Image (cartoon, rainbow, N blue to C red; front, side, top):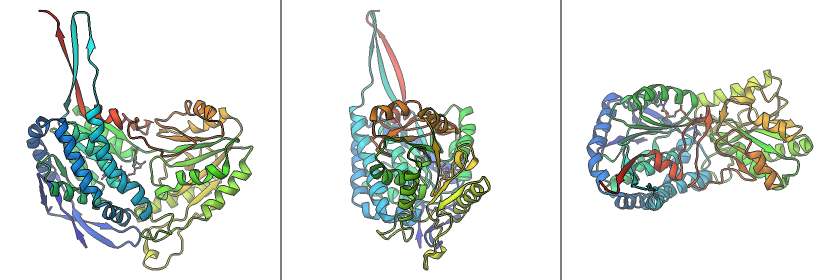
Length: 479
Ligand code: NAD
């Protein structure tokens, strides 16, 4: 049994009460984590407050060096990060290695380098010069979900601290283990006390207290749309800087000229990666009626060939869902789909696995057709291994269907004609669209959604601008 503590002011501090953390693949308790309340959050905020002056004064070059030190220390523990992430989330180990462990290191390295090269324009007038400088915002409250735990936590901590802010972070209570590893790394390398404080616990308690705290100047939140509304309602009247990265219901548009043999493995990956628990997953597949039968046949065969099981095995394509209650939610959508007239083409139930995995929260990858693109199943975020497929007759109809939900996070277009793909992509109402690829990430580009998928952008200069205050100093040439 792992017992973890909060990391506050450069020390591991126990809380009065603890929560249990489960292994989603077996249902077993694997860790006890602090159930932090107001007291722990206030201690963390005070520590972040005390560290502000020193940290903002040391300068960007030195802060970037600290990010490299964190990256080196994380890299040395890459295998451990992958194992802990797989254990805590139920995701296949190969995925945890390729995506979670490597990106967590890359986030620190990227922002260390990018911040050093980041320049802000000066604006010359006939009689004066405008100098734009970037100052830290202050204390950053960072709140993250369970699907990509250290990947998303590091995506926020790295730009926040390199720009001179100090941090109070709250990882998901469902997946605290790699945030604890990050605390250990930060402690080992001797990052000045109070620069990064990590507080564990429930969102409605620790998370809410961070957002409510008047000393916290900025909130970067990634999570569900309903929670995002609550975070915004608390933070907005206090005029905090706010970034909200929320849910999605992303369309995958497959045109008649696409090479199905090349694109289907990628479209399957986009639907089912991490058991469909990635905000960017393409869970609504819109297919040209000219290739409908061939697509459905090949796609379903591919999905049926995927193995669900032990996340620590390199043979597993899909692991477990995050919790029993989340699997219940996903299953409730499969039942809803049946009531809405959908036909389950494959999956739809829990697989038969041998002990101890028979107690885990597994679900077969599920493909549903026959639903209206306006049905609840096809428009609400399910966040599980469930995709719906729908035929369309024309490009215009595909765009109308793609844009029919309240979400606007991402999407993809698959075609043999990249120019046509880009033209269609421009008409999709989301923050990000891929053409003939999916989750192909360049960390310099803007990341974020529109409509109910969020407010603001992170990534590259968008992150650095969000985690700083731009101040203009206008100097007249002569008195
Ligand atoms: P969630 O909203 O339940 O929780 C996210 C975080 O917020 C957790 O740390 C939680 O403890 C905390 N929280 C809960 N209530 C809070 C409150 N009142 N105040 C402050 N914090 C609170 O989301 P989840 O179930 O952990 O994650 C899944 C959701 O996240 C999905 O909707 C998914 O699409 C979304 N997501 C979005 C992105 C993106 O970049 N847009 C990335 C990953 C996940």
